[in-house]
Amino acid sequence: MTGPEPQPSRAPIQAEGRRHSRPRQPRRVTEVDTDLLELTDTRIHEPQRVAASAHGMVSTAHYSATAAGVRMLEQGGNAVDAAVAAALALGVCEPAASGLGGQTMMLVHHRASGTTVAVDGSSRAPNGALIDSFANLRADRRRGHRATTVPSSPATYAHVLERFGRLGWATVLEPAIELAADGYEISVLQYRLTRRERRHMKAHSAGPLFLQDGRRARRAGTRFVQPALAATLRRLAEQGYEDFYSGETARLIHEDMVANDGFLREDDLAQIPVPVEREPLSGRLGRDRVLTMPLPGAGRTLLEMLNIHQSLPRELQDLDTPDGAVCLARTMRQALIDRNDRPFDPDLYDQVPDKQMLNRQYARGVARRIAAIQTSGETTHLSVMDADGNTVALTQSIENVYGSCAASPQLGFLYNNYMSAFNLEDPSHPYYLRPNAVPWASVAPTIVFKDERPWLAIGSPGSERIPPAILQVLLRLRRSSPLAAVDAPRIHCSLDGVVSAEASRISTDVLDALGRSGFELTRREPYSFYMGCVQLVMADGDRLVGVADPRRDGAAAGPDSAPAAMPA
Figure 1 (spheres, rainbow, N blue to C red):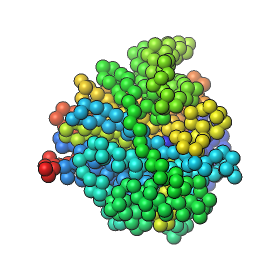
Figure 2: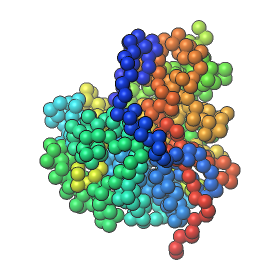
Figure 3: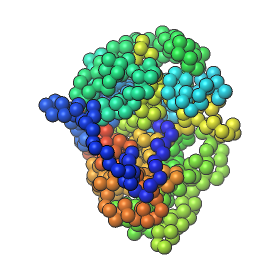
Protein backbone atom coordinates (compact mmCIF):
# COMPACT_ATOMS: atom_id res chain seq x y z
CA MET A 1 0.00 0.00 0.00
CA THR A 2 2.71 2.45 0.82
CA GLY A 3 6.05 1.01 -0.19
CA PRO A 4 8.94 3.24 -1.21
CA GLU A 5 8.46 4.73 -4.65
CA PRO A 6 10.82 3.76 -7.48
CA GLN A 7 13.30 6.57 -8.04
CA PRO A 8 13.34 7.53 -11.73
CA SER A 9 16.62 8.53 -13.33
CA ARG A 10 17.03 12.25 -13.86
CA ALA A 11 16.42 12.93 -17.54
CA PRO A 12 13.99 15.29 -19.30
CA ILE A 13 12.08 12.47 -20.99
CA GLN A 14 12.84 8.85 -20.37
CA ALA A 15 11.40 5.48 -21.18
CA GLU A 16 10.38 3.01 -18.52
CA GLY A 17 13.69 1.80 -17.13
CA ARG A 18 15.85 3.31 -19.93
CA ARG A 19 17.14 6.79 -20.78
CA HIS A 20 16.73 7.91 -24.35
CA SER A 21 20.33 9.07 -24.45
CA ARG A 22 21.64 5.56 -23.81
CA PRO A 23 22.49 3.55 -26.95
CA ARG A 24 20.03 0.76 -27.54
CA GLN A 25 21.49 -2.73 -27.20
CA PRO A 26 20.49 -5.55 -29.55
CA ARG A 27 17.28 -7.05 -28.25
CA ARG A 28 17.72 -10.41 -26.59
CA VAL A 29 15.11 -13.15 -26.69
CA THR A 30 14.27 -13.54 -23.01
CA GLU A 31 12.33 -16.10 -21.03
CA VAL A 32 9.31 -13.80 -21.26
CA ASP A 33 9.50 -13.77 -25.05
CA THR A 34 9.77 -17.53 -25.47
CA ASP A 35 6.98 -18.25 -23.02
CA LEU A 36 4.67 -15.72 -24.68
CA LEU A 37 5.42 -17.25 -28.06
CA GLU A 38 4.36 -20.62 -26.68
CA LEU A 39 1.02 -19.10 -25.70
CA THR A 40 -0.09 -18.59 -29.28
CA ASP A 41 -1.94 -21.92 -29.13
CA THR A 42 -3.00 -21.55 -25.49
CA ARG A 43 -6.31 -20.02 -24.47
CA ILE A 44 -5.73 -17.36 -21.83
CA HIS A 45 -8.85 -16.28 -19.98
CA GLU A 46 -10.12 -12.87 -21.12
CA PRO A 47 -11.91 -11.22 -18.18
CA GLN A 48 -15.22 -9.39 -18.55
CA ARG A 49 -14.16 -5.78 -17.91
CA VAL A 50 -17.64 -4.22 -17.79
CA ALA A 51 -20.95 -5.72 -16.66
CA ALA A 52 -24.48 -4.74 -15.64
CA SER A 53 -27.03 -6.40 -13.37
CA ALA A 54 -30.11 -5.43 -11.37
CA HIS A 55 -29.24 -7.92 -8.63
CA GLY A 56 -25.82 -6.81 -7.39
CA MET A 57 -22.38 -6.10 -8.79
CA VAL A 58 -18.80 -7.10 -7.94
CA SER A 59 -15.62 -5.66 -9.45
CA THR A 60 -12.22 -7.02 -8.38
CA ALA A 61 -8.68 -7.31 -9.70
CA HIS A 62 -9.11 -11.00 -10.63
CA TYR A 63 -12.00 -12.73 -12.36
CA SER A 64 -11.93 -15.70 -9.95
CA ALA A 65 -12.38 -13.37 -6.99
CA THR A 66 -15.23 -11.61 -8.78
CA ALA A 67 -16.91 -14.99 -9.25
CA ALA A 68 -16.49 -15.69 -5.52
CA GLY A 69 -18.28 -12.45 -4.65
CA VAL A 70 -21.10 -13.08 -7.12
CA ARG A 71 -21.54 -16.57 -5.66
CA MET A 72 -22.21 -15.07 -2.22
CA LEU A 73 -24.83 -12.69 -3.66
CA GLU A 74 -26.51 -15.60 -5.42
CA GLN A 75 -26.65 -17.47 -2.11
CA GLY A 76 -28.51 -14.61 -0.46
CA GLY A 77 -25.51 -12.82 1.02
CA ASN A 78 -25.13 -9.07 1.00
CA ALA A 79 -22.36 -6.77 -0.24
CA VAL A 80 -20.24 -7.43 2.88
CA ASP A 81 -20.40 -11.21 2.46
CA ALA A 82 -19.50 -10.81 -1.22
CA ALA A 83 -16.64 -8.41 -0.47
CA VAL A 84 -15.07 -10.67 2.16
CA ALA A 85 -15.39 -13.76 -0.03
CA ALA A 86 -13.79 -11.86 -2.92
CA ALA A 87 -11.03 -10.52 -0.66
CA LEU A 88 -10.22 -14.02 0.59
CA ALA A 89 -10.20 -15.30 -2.98
CA LEU A 90 -7.84 -12.51 -4.07
CA GLY A 91 -5.41 -13.75 -1.45
CA VAL A 92 -5.36 -17.05 -3.34
CA CYS A 93 -5.39 -15.96 -7.00
CA GLU A 94 -3.55 -12.64 -6.67
CA PRO A 95 -0.95 -13.63 -4.04
CA ALA A 96 1.53 -10.95 -5.10
CA ALA A 97 -0.86 -8.26 -3.84
CA SER A 98 -2.71 -9.50 -0.76
CA GLY A 99 -3.55 -12.46 1.45
CA LEU A 100 -3.99 -13.73 4.98
CA GLY A 101 -0.59 -12.28 5.88
CA GLY A 102 -1.54 -8.67 5.13
CA GLN A 103 -3.92 -5.92 6.16
CA THR A 104 -7.35 -4.78 4.95
CA MET A 105 -9.19 -1.46 5.07
CA MET A 106 -12.65 -0.63 3.78
CA LEU A 107 -15.65 1.64 3.72
CA VAL A 108 -18.98 -0.07 4.42
CA HIS A 109 -22.39 1.48 3.84
CA HIS A 110 -25.11 -0.45 5.67
CA ARG A 111 -28.43 0.34 4.07
CA ALA A 112 -30.75 -0.76 6.89
CA SER A 113 -29.13 1.47 9.51
CA GLY A 114 -28.12 4.21 7.08
CA THR A 115 -24.59 4.22 8.49
CA THR A 116 -21.28 4.38 6.66
CA VAL A 117 -18.16 3.38 8.57
CA ALA A 118 -14.47 3.30 7.74
CA VAL A 119 -12.98 0.03 8.97
CA ASP A 120 -9.31 0.56 9.81
CA GLY A 121 -7.76 -2.89 9.67
CA SER A 122 -4.18 -1.76 10.20
CA SER A 123 -1.56 -4.33 11.05
CA ARG A 124 0.72 -3.82 14.07
CA ALA A 125 4.46 -3.84 14.64
CA PRO A 126 5.54 -6.85 16.76
CA ASN A 127 6.73 -6.21 20.30
CA GLY A 128 10.29 -7.18 19.39
CA ALA A 129 10.47 -4.79 16.43
CA LEU A 130 12.94 -2.19 17.66
CA ILE A 131 15.12 -0.21 15.29
CA ASP A 132 18.27 -1.43 17.05
CA SER A 133 17.16 -5.04 16.51
CA PHE A 134 17.67 -4.95 12.74
CA ALA A 135 21.03 -6.17 11.48
CA ASN A 136 20.45 -4.46 8.14
CA LEU A 137 17.86 -1.74 8.65
CA ARG A 138 16.99 -1.33 4.96
CA ALA A 139 17.16 -4.90 3.67
CA ASP A 140 15.53 -6.58 6.68
CA ARG A 141 12.53 -4.23 6.52
CA ARG A 142 11.92 -5.03 2.85
CA ARG A 143 12.25 -8.81 2.63
CA GLY A 144 12.48 -11.84 4.85
CA HIS A 145 10.75 -12.80 8.08
CA ARG A 146 11.81 -9.64 9.92
CA ALA A 147 9.88 -7.47 7.46
CA THR A 148 6.42 -8.54 8.61
CA THR A 149 3.96 -6.93 10.97
CA VAL A 150 1.09 -8.72 12.78
CA PRO A 151 -1.34 -9.68 9.98
CA SER A 152 -4.76 -8.12 10.48
CA SER A 153 -6.79 -9.25 7.47
CA PRO A 154 -8.39 -12.34 9.11
CA ALA A 155 -9.53 -10.28 12.11
CA THR A 156 -10.90 -7.56 9.83
CA TYR A 157 -12.86 -10.03 7.69
CA ALA A 158 -14.39 -11.64 10.77
CA HIS A 159 -15.27 -8.26 12.30
CA VAL A 160 -17.23 -6.92 9.33
CA LEU A 161 -18.98 -10.26 8.78
CA GLU A 162 -20.18 -10.30 12.37
CA ARG A 163 -21.26 -6.64 12.24
CA PHE A 164 -22.86 -6.48 8.80
CA GLY A 165 -22.88 -9.87 7.03
CA ARG A 166 -25.65 -12.40 6.50
CA LEU A 167 -23.70 -15.56 5.76
CA GLY A 168 -21.46 -17.50 8.10
CA TRP A 169 -17.65 -17.40 8.25
CA ALA A 170 -17.27 -20.92 6.86
CA THR A 171 -19.61 -20.22 3.93
CA VAL A 172 -17.71 -17.11 2.90
CA LEU A 173 -14.42 -19.06 2.96
CA GLU A 174 -15.65 -21.79 0.59
CA PRO A 175 -14.67 -20.15 -2.74
CA ALA A 176 -11.14 -19.38 -1.53
CA ILE A 177 -10.68 -22.95 -0.27
CA GLU A 178 -11.78 -24.34 -3.64
CA LEU A 179 -9.49 -21.97 -5.55
CA ALA A 180 -6.49 -22.99 -3.47
CA ALA A 181 -7.29 -26.72 -3.70
CA ASP A 182 -8.27 -26.84 -7.39
CA GLY A 183 -5.95 -24.12 -8.65
CA TYR A 184 -6.30 -21.19 -11.01
CA GLU A 185 -4.72 -20.15 -14.29
CA ILE A 186 -1.55 -18.03 -14.15
CA SER A 187 -1.96 -14.85 -16.20
CA VAL A 188 0.63 -13.10 -18.35
CA LEU A 189 0.77 -10.27 -15.79
CA GLN A 190 1.38 -12.68 -12.91
CA TYR A 191 4.10 -14.43 -14.87
CA ARG A 192 5.88 -11.13 -15.50
CA LEU A 193 5.58 -9.98 -11.88
CA THR A 194 6.87 -13.30 -10.58
CA ARG A 195 9.76 -13.28 -13.01
CA ARG A 196 10.65 -9.76 -11.90
CA GLU A 197 10.72 -10.74 -8.22
CA ARG A 198 12.01 -14.32 -8.49
CA ARG A 199 15.56 -13.41 -7.41
CA HIS A 200 14.19 -12.24 -4.05
CA MET A 201 11.78 -15.14 -3.77
CA LYS A 202 14.58 -17.64 -4.38
CA ALA A 203 16.61 -15.92 -1.66
CA HIS A 204 13.77 -16.34 0.84
CA SER A 205 11.23 -18.97 1.77
CA ALA A 206 8.53 -18.02 -0.77
CA GLY A 207 10.49 -19.61 -3.62
CA PRO A 208 9.51 -23.26 -3.07
CA LEU A 209 5.83 -22.31 -2.83
CA PHE A 210 5.43 -19.77 -5.62
CA LEU A 211 8.14 -20.66 -8.17
CA GLN A 212 8.08 -23.65 -10.51
CA ASP A 213 10.50 -26.18 -9.01
CA GLY A 214 11.61 -23.38 -6.70
CA ARG A 215 13.49 -21.72 -9.57
CA ARG A 216 11.36 -20.32 -12.40
CA ALA A 217 8.26 -18.21 -12.74
CA ARG A 218 5.23 -20.32 -13.52
CA ARG A 219 4.26 -19.85 -17.14
CA ALA A 220 1.09 -18.04 -18.16
CA GLY A 221 -1.72 -20.45 -18.87
CA THR A 222 -0.54 -23.10 -16.40
CA ARG A 223 -2.57 -24.05 -13.34
CA PHE A 224 -1.31 -23.14 -9.87
CA VAL A 225 -2.52 -25.36 -7.02
CA GLN A 226 -1.79 -24.41 -3.38
CA PRO A 227 -2.47 -27.38 -1.05
CA ALA A 228 -0.80 -25.83 2.00
CA LEU A 229 -2.92 -22.68 1.71
CA ALA A 230 -6.05 -24.79 1.16
CA ALA A 231 -5.33 -26.66 4.41
CA THR A 232 -4.84 -23.38 6.29
CA LEU A 233 -8.12 -21.98 4.96
CA ARG A 234 -9.99 -25.19 5.84
CA ARG A 235 -8.66 -25.03 9.37
CA LEU A 236 -9.77 -21.41 9.71
CA ALA A 237 -13.21 -22.36 8.37
CA GLU A 238 -13.53 -25.14 10.94
CA GLN A 239 -11.92 -23.45 13.94
CA GLY A 240 -12.84 -19.81 13.30
CA TYR A 241 -10.61 -16.85 12.57
CA GLU A 242 -9.28 -17.04 16.14
CA ASP A 243 -7.16 -20.01 15.10
CA PHE A 244 -4.97 -17.58 13.17
CA TYR A 245 -4.17 -15.70 16.40
CA SER A 246 -4.32 -18.29 19.18
CA GLY A 247 -4.65 -21.76 17.65
CA GLU A 248 -2.73 -24.15 15.42
CA THR A 249 -2.11 -21.52 12.75
CA ALA A 250 -0.67 -19.14 15.36
CA ARG A 251 1.61 -21.91 16.64
CA LEU A 252 2.91 -22.60 13.13
CA ILE A 253 3.54 -18.90 12.50
CA HIS A 254 5.43 -18.64 15.80
CA GLU A 255 7.60 -21.67 15.01
CA ASP A 256 8.33 -20.41 11.50
CA MET A 257 9.33 -16.99 12.82
CA VAL A 258 11.60 -18.46 15.52
CA ALA A 259 13.28 -20.75 12.98
CA ASN A 260 13.91 -17.84 10.58
CA ASP A 261 14.87 -15.13 13.09
CA GLY A 262 11.68 -13.12 12.61
CA PHE A 263 10.15 -10.81 15.23
CA LEU A 264 6.56 -12.08 15.24
CA ARG A 265 5.66 -14.28 18.23
CA GLU A 266 2.63 -15.96 19.80
CA ASP A 267 2.11 -13.07 22.20
CA ASP A 268 1.95 -10.62 19.28
CA LEU A 269 -0.71 -12.71 17.55
CA ALA A 270 -2.66 -13.22 20.79
CA GLN A 271 -3.14 -9.44 20.98
CA ILE A 272 -5.58 -9.74 18.08
CA PRO A 273 -5.42 -6.63 15.85
CA VAL A 274 -9.16 -5.99 15.99
CA PRO A 275 -10.02 -3.28 13.44
CA VAL A 276 -11.07 0.20 14.50
CA GLU A 277 -14.29 1.69 13.14
CA ARG A 278 -13.68 5.34 12.24
CA GLU A 279 -15.83 8.11 10.84
CA PRO A 280 -15.16 8.54 7.12
CA LEU A 281 -13.80 11.83 5.82
CA SER A 282 -16.39 13.83 3.88
CA GLY A 283 -16.00 16.02 0.81
CA ARG A 284 -17.81 17.10 -2.33
CA LEU A 285 -17.70 16.17 -6.01
CA GLY A 286 -19.93 18.81 -7.49
CA ARG A 287 -23.24 18.31 -5.68
CA ASP A 288 -22.41 14.75 -4.66
CA ARG A 289 -21.05 13.76 -1.26
CA VAL A 290 -17.76 11.85 -1.15
CA LEU A 291 -16.90 9.64 1.82
CA THR A 292 -13.40 8.21 1.96
CA MET A 293 -10.80 6.60 4.22
CA PRO A 294 -9.46 8.64 7.16
CA LEU A 295 -5.99 8.30 8.63
CA PRO A 296 -3.92 6.18 8.58
CA GLY A 297 -5.26 5.98 5.01
CA ALA A 298 -4.96 8.67 2.33
CA GLY A 299 -8.53 9.84 1.88
CA ARG A 300 -7.63 13.39 2.90
CA THR A 301 -5.08 13.47 0.05
CA LEU A 302 -7.82 12.52 -2.41
CA LEU A 303 -10.19 15.17 -1.00
CA GLU A 304 -7.53 17.87 -1.18
CA MET A 305 -6.90 16.99 -4.83
CA LEU A 306 -10.63 17.17 -5.54
CA ASN A 307 -10.98 20.51 -3.75
CA ILE A 308 -8.04 22.07 -5.59
CA HIS A 309 -9.07 20.80 -9.00
CA GLN A 310 -12.69 21.94 -8.60
CA SER A 311 -11.41 25.40 -7.61
CA LEU A 312 -9.45 25.83 -10.85
CA PRO A 313 -10.92 27.98 -13.66
CA ARG A 314 -13.12 25.81 -15.86
CA GLU A 315 -10.76 26.13 -18.83
CA LEU A 316 -7.99 24.48 -16.77
CA GLN A 317 -10.05 21.47 -15.63
CA ASP A 318 -9.86 19.45 -18.87
CA LEU A 319 -7.39 16.64 -18.24
CA ASP A 320 -6.68 16.11 -21.93
CA THR A 321 -5.43 19.62 -22.74
CA PRO A 322 -1.85 20.78 -22.17
CA ASP A 323 -2.86 23.37 -19.57
CA GLY A 324 -5.25 20.96 -17.86
CA ALA A 325 -2.64 18.21 -17.59
CA VAL A 326 -0.06 20.58 -16.10
CA CYS A 327 -2.60 21.81 -13.52
CA LEU A 328 -3.50 18.20 -12.70
CA ALA A 329 0.18 17.34 -12.12
CA ARG A 330 0.64 20.39 -9.86
CA THR A 331 -2.52 19.48 -7.94
CA MET A 332 -1.23 15.96 -7.30
CA ARG A 333 2.17 17.15 -6.20
CA GLN A 334 0.83 19.77 -3.79
CA ALA A 335 -1.48 17.28 -2.09
CA LEU A 336 1.35 14.76 -1.71
CA ILE A 337 3.62 17.47 -0.26
CA ASP A 338 0.91 18.43 2.24
CA ARG A 339 0.36 14.80 3.24
CA ASN A 340 4.08 14.32 3.82
CA ASP A 341 4.28 17.54 5.85
CA ARG A 342 1.21 16.84 8.01
CA PRO A 343 1.30 13.34 9.49
CA PHE A 344 -1.16 12.75 12.34
CA ASP A 345 -1.98 9.93 14.71
CA PRO A 346 -5.33 8.56 13.50
CA ASP A 347 -6.62 8.39 17.08
CA LEU A 348 -5.86 12.10 17.65
CA TYR A 349 -6.80 13.49 14.24
CA ASP A 350 -10.38 14.35 15.25
CA GLN A 351 -8.95 16.72 17.85
CA VAL A 352 -6.86 18.67 15.30
CA PRO A 353 -8.61 22.05 14.96
CA ASP A 354 -7.08 23.14 11.63
CA LYS A 355 -7.49 20.33 9.09
CA GLN A 356 -5.79 22.30 6.33
CA MET A 357 -5.82 19.49 3.76
CA LEU A 358 -9.64 19.40 3.94
CA ASN A 359 -10.07 23.18 4.01
CA ARG A 360 -11.76 24.51 0.86
CA GLN A 361 -10.42 28.00 1.42
CA TYR A 362 -6.88 26.60 1.44
CA ALA A 363 -7.67 24.60 -1.71
CA ARG A 364 -8.93 27.74 -3.46
CA GLY A 365 -5.68 29.50 -2.60
CA VAL A 366 -3.62 26.64 -4.00
CA ALA A 367 -5.78 26.61 -7.14
CA ARG A 368 -5.19 30.35 -7.63
CA ARG A 369 -1.42 29.81 -7.40
CA ILE A 370 -1.57 26.91 -9.86
CA ALA A 371 -3.69 28.91 -12.29
CA ALA A 372 -1.38 31.89 -11.97
CA ILE A 373 1.66 29.75 -12.70
CA GLN A 374 -0.19 28.21 -15.61
CA THR A 375 -0.88 31.50 -17.39
CA SER A 376 2.61 32.83 -17.17
CA GLY A 377 3.64 16.91 -11.32
CA GLU A 378 1.08 -3.07 -4.44
CA THR A 379 -2.12 -3.62 -3.21
CA THR A 380 -5.51 -4.70 -4.53
CA HIS A 381 -8.97 -3.17 -4.48
CA LEU A 382 -12.53 -4.42 -4.90
CA SER A 383 -15.93 -2.72 -4.97
CA VAL A 384 -19.34 -4.30 -4.32
CA MET A 385 -22.98 -3.20 -4.26
CA ASP A 386 -25.98 -5.40 -3.63
CA ALA A 387 -29.57 -4.92 -4.75
CA ASP A 388 -30.54 -3.48 -1.35
CA GLY A 389 -28.00 -0.66 -1.53
CA ASN A 390 -25.37 -2.09 0.83
CA THR A 391 -21.98 -0.97 -0.49
CA VAL A 392 -18.35 -1.89 0.17
CA ALA A 393 -15.11 -0.35 -1.09
CA LEU A 394 -12.23 -2.53 0.15
CA THR A 395 -8.48 -2.15 -0.29
CA GLN A 396 -5.99 -4.69 1.06
CA SER A 397 -2.31 -5.45 0.69
CA ILE A 398 0.82 -7.27 1.74
CA GLU A 399 2.63 -3.98 0.93
CA ASN A 400 5.14 -4.53 -1.92
CA VAL A 401 4.77 -7.06 -4.74
CA TYR A 402 5.02 -10.48 -3.07
CA GLY A 403 5.36 -8.75 0.30
CA SER A 404 8.32 -9.99 2.31
CA CYS A 405 8.98 -12.85 -0.16
CA ALA A 406 8.78 -15.08 2.92
CA ALA A 407 6.21 -17.77 3.68
CA SER A 408 5.81 -20.86 5.82
CA PRO A 409 5.66 -24.03 3.68
CA GLN A 410 3.10 -25.40 6.14
CA LEU A 411 0.76 -22.40 5.84
CA GLY A 412 1.04 -21.34 2.21
CA PHE A 413 0.53 -17.57 2.44
CA LEU A 414 3.03 -14.74 2.12
CA TYR A 415 3.95 -12.54 5.06
CA ASN A 416 3.64 -8.80 4.47
CA ASN A 417 6.56 -6.35 4.54
CA TYR A 418 4.87 -3.43 6.27
CA MET A 419 7.99 -2.84 8.34
CA SER A 420 9.10 -0.78 5.34
CA ALA A 421 6.16 1.63 5.86
CA PHE A 422 7.31 3.10 9.21
CA ASN A 423 9.19 6.30 9.92
CA LEU A 424 12.69 5.69 11.29
CA GLU A 425 14.09 9.18 11.92
CA ASP A 426 11.65 11.09 14.14
CA PRO A 427 10.46 9.45 17.40
CA SER A 428 7.63 12.01 17.59
CA HIS A 429 6.28 10.95 14.19
CA PRO A 430 2.91 9.14 14.57
CA TYR A 431 4.14 6.31 12.35
CA TYR A 432 7.58 5.93 13.94
CA LEU A 433 8.64 2.29 14.28
CA ARG A 434 7.85 1.16 17.80
CA PRO A 435 6.15 -1.96 19.25
CA ASN A 436 2.43 -2.13 18.40
CA ALA A 437 2.62 0.92 16.09
CA VAL A 438 0.53 0.97 12.91
CA PRO A 439 2.14 1.62 9.50
CA TRP A 440 1.31 4.60 7.31
CA ALA A 441 -0.98 3.69 4.41
CA SER A 442 -1.92 5.25 1.07
CA VAL A 443 -5.28 3.53 0.61
CA ALA A 444 -8.42 5.53 -0.18
CA PRO A 445 -11.48 3.27 -0.59
CA THR A 446 -14.27 5.70 -1.42
CA ILE A 447 -18.08 5.81 -1.72
CA VAL A 448 -19.86 8.67 -3.52
CA PHE A 449 -23.48 9.46 -2.65
CA LYS A 450 -26.19 11.06 -4.78
CA ASP A 451 -29.24 12.21 -2.81
CA GLU A 452 -28.04 10.25 0.23
CA ARG A 453 -27.93 6.96 -1.70
CA PRO A 454 -24.69 5.21 -2.72
CA TRP A 455 -23.95 6.01 -6.35
CA LEU A 456 -20.35 4.87 -6.71
CA ALA A 457 -17.89 2.61 -4.90
CA ILE A 458 -14.32 3.07 -6.08
CA GLY A 459 -10.69 2.51 -5.14
CA SER A 460 -7.30 1.48 -6.47
CA PRO A 461 -3.97 -0.06 -5.50
CA GLY A 462 -0.69 1.72 -6.24
CA SER A 463 0.89 3.31 -3.14
CA GLU A 464 1.04 7.13 -3.51
CA ARG A 465 -0.54 6.71 -6.97
CA ILE A 466 -3.85 5.62 -5.38
CA PRO A 467 -5.46 9.07 -4.84
CA PRO A 468 -4.36 10.36 -8.28
CA ALA A 469 -5.75 7.28 -10.04
CA ILE A 470 -9.12 7.62 -8.27
CA LEU A 471 -9.14 11.38 -8.87
CA GLN A 472 -8.72 11.03 -12.63
CA VAL A 473 -11.54 8.50 -12.91
CA LEU A 474 -13.86 10.64 -10.75
CA LEU A 475 -13.18 13.69 -12.89
CA ARG A 476 -13.68 11.81 -16.16
CA LEU A 477 -16.98 10.32 -14.99
CA ARG A 478 -18.50 13.79 -15.45
CA ARG A 479 -18.27 13.42 -19.22
CA SER A 480 -17.44 9.76 -19.91
CA SER A 481 -19.00 6.37 -19.50
CA PRO A 482 -17.67 4.33 -16.54
CA LEU A 483 -15.62 2.09 -18.84
CA ALA A 484 -14.14 5.03 -20.76
CA ALA A 485 -13.27 6.82 -17.50
CA VAL A 486 -11.34 3.80 -16.20
CA ASP A 487 -9.78 2.97 -19.56
CA ALA A 488 -8.48 6.53 -20.23
CA PRO A 489 -4.70 7.16 -20.08
CA ARG A 490 -3.33 8.35 -16.73
CA ILE A 491 -0.54 10.44 -15.36
CA HIS A 492 0.98 10.63 -11.91
CA CYS A 493 3.15 13.35 -10.37
CA SER A 494 5.44 12.28 -7.53
CA LEU A 495 6.49 14.27 -4.51
CA ASP A 496 9.70 15.36 -6.25
CA GLY A 497 8.01 16.46 -9.47
CA VAL A 498 8.51 13.42 -11.71
CA VAL A 499 5.49 12.82 -13.95
CA SER A 500 4.82 9.24 -15.02
CA ALA A 501 2.58 9.01 -18.08
CA GLU A 502 1.10 6.33 -20.31
CA ALA A 503 2.80 8.35 -23.00
CA SER A 504 1.83 6.56 -26.21
CA ARG A 505 -1.85 7.17 -25.39
CA ILE A 506 -1.40 10.87 -24.55
CA SER A 507 -1.16 13.72 -27.04
CA THR A 508 2.38 14.97 -27.69
CA ASP A 509 1.36 18.58 -27.00
CA VAL A 510 0.32 17.50 -23.49
CA LEU A 511 3.66 15.74 -22.93
CA ASP A 512 5.56 18.75 -24.28
CA ALA A 513 3.65 21.09 -21.97
CA LEU A 514 4.58 18.99 -18.94
CA GLY A 515 8.25 19.12 -19.96
CA ARG A 516 8.17 22.89 -20.51
CA SER A 517 6.58 23.35 -17.08
CA GLY A 518 9.60 21.85 -15.33
CA PHE A 519 8.41 18.29 -14.80
CA GLU A 520 10.63 15.35 -15.59
CA LEU A 521 8.70 12.83 -17.63
CA THR A 522 8.90 9.06 -17.27
CA ARG A 523 7.26 7.19 -20.12
CA ARG A 524 5.17 4.24 -18.98
CA GLU A 525 3.78 1.52 -21.20
CA PRO A 526 0.10 1.63 -22.26
CA TYR A 527 -2.19 0.36 -19.49
CA SER A 528 0.77 0.32 -17.14
CA PHE A 529 0.69 -1.80 -13.98
CA TYR A 530 2.39 1.15 -12.29
CA MET A 531 -0.60 3.45 -12.79
CA GLY A 532 -2.99 1.76 -10.39
CA CYS A 533 -5.99 -0.48 -11.01
CA VAL A 534 -9.37 1.14 -10.40
CA GLN A 535 -12.33 -1.13 -9.66
CA LEU A 536 -15.69 0.62 -9.55
CA VAL A 537 -19.36 -0.23 -9.14
CA MET A 538 -21.99 2.38 -10.01
CA ALA A 539 -25.75 2.65 -9.56
CA ASP A 540 -27.34 3.49 -12.91
CA GLY A 541 -31.11 3.75 -12.64
CA ASP A 542 -32.56 0.33 -11.88
CA ARG A 543 -29.31 -1.50 -12.58
CA LEU A 544 -25.76 -1.65 -11.27
CA VAL A 545 -22.75 -1.25 -13.56
CA GLY A 546 -19.29 -2.58 -12.75
CA VAL A 547 -15.95 -1.82 -14.39
CA ALA A 548 -12.64 -3.61 -13.82
CA ASP A 549 -9.45 -1.83 -14.81
CA PRO A 550 -7.77 -3.39 -17.88
CA ARG A 551 -4.36 -2.69 -16.30
CA ARG A 552 -4.56 -5.98 -14.40
CA ASP A 553 -6.55 -9.24 -14.45
CA GLY A 554 -9.81 -7.85 -13.09
CA ALA A 555 -13.40 -8.60 -13.98
CA ALA A 556 -16.85 -7.23 -13.19
CA ALA A 557 -19.94 -9.40 -12.82
CA GLY A 558 -23.30 -9.62 -11.11
CA PRO A 559 -25.98 -12.27 -10.53
CA ASP A 560 -28.19 -13.13 -13.49
CA SER A 561 -31.26 -13.30 -11.31
CA ALA A 562 -32.49 -12.36 -7.86
CA PRO A 563 -30.88 -14.48 -5.13
CA ALA A 564 -32.80 -17.14 -3.28
CA ALA A 565 -34.43 -15.97 -0.08
CA MET A 566 -32.36 -16.50 3.04
CA PRO A 567 -33.73 -19.17 5.42
CA ALA A 568 -35.57 -17.81 8.44
